[in-house]
Amino acid sequence: MFSGSHSHSGPGAIASEMLWSLAPATDLVVPALQRQIAESFAEAMVQAERSMRPAKIGIGASLLYNVTHNRRAGISPYVNSTTIDPNLMVLRVDGDDGKPIATLWNYAIHGTCWGPSNMLFSADIMGGVNTLIESQTGAYSLFINGDAGDISPDSWVCDGKPNYGGAPTIAQAVLDNRAGIKTSKNVSIQTHSANIDFGPTILNATLARFFNCTTGGPLDVCTLCSILKCVDNAQMPSSWIEDNPVFGAFRVRIDNTQTLFVSMPGEPLVELGNQVRRDSKSLGFDNTFLCGYTNSHMGYFCTPNEYDVGGYESQLTFWGIYTAEKVRSGCFYVASTVRPNDNTLAVSRPPTFLKHLPSELYPEVLKALNLA
Image (cartoon, rainbow, N blue to C red):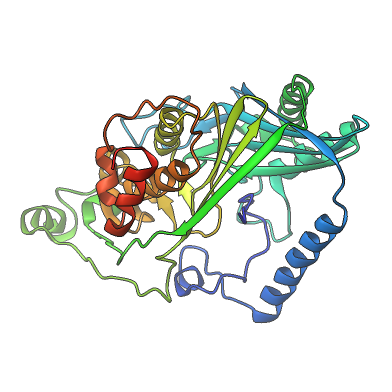
């Protein structure tokens, strides 16, 4: 899995897809910078492999409130400001001597403490938290973002940046979680990945969705378009945006606890994150790391409810009203192939959302669920 923290002040100019060169990021690719960053990633991976040594790991789950809010509050009738994902997942890695090697934490938060006027690179709030964790543990701290599509940091969390006011609170929550984790060497890992074909985009560009306009407007165009069903469903070619993303799943068994790491190739809204967590529970997993912004960036993933409401996130949901269902079915597919065989399934029939899975993969899901 390749996962982005989604700091809005991170390096750009590395995406090859034409869409991101135009809007909303106007992120014109610079090949030399693209190569430099790719080489840096590769060097970090080589160094990590060369530094491998015996270790013990453990996983902890806790809840963290009052540092984020839902930015669609006031736009969507389905959420309020407190509709967030409070799940804070932590992977603890220690050496055989008990000394920390690394801390990996997973939480849903946008890296938007620095606004568009900032012209300097910054790891934003998640980087500020990592700095504090590393100062306390003397070991690496890594962050994986979650279902943060509609989740922003509270204003007080960003106060005083780059000495973020909320960084100590978040860091302490991660450290408290880490301190309560029992590590073990009794570990097994199973993985599966697959390309999931999303097919052509469905832009569904209507005045109602893009301008929240159903009546009135200049020359009464909103009323006319409501009657005439004006819509632009122009499709973007694959050179403009990824349409065959890689979904990945890791099953990590530590003693008798089963944890799922599952990738989501863009920005899932919190409603979709809740659905994927419930799905993983039904497959027998005890814990779930939602790895958003991972393996690709295909825009936002609005659920049908939020898609119909409109707004920025809906406008950047590119496969129509069932985009989130496609993502959910991809997550379910790869998770089902690595599900714990010793756990009782809470799935007696294929979920209806799997109709959005490519038909050639459907039999594999039935086999994995013992429903074939």
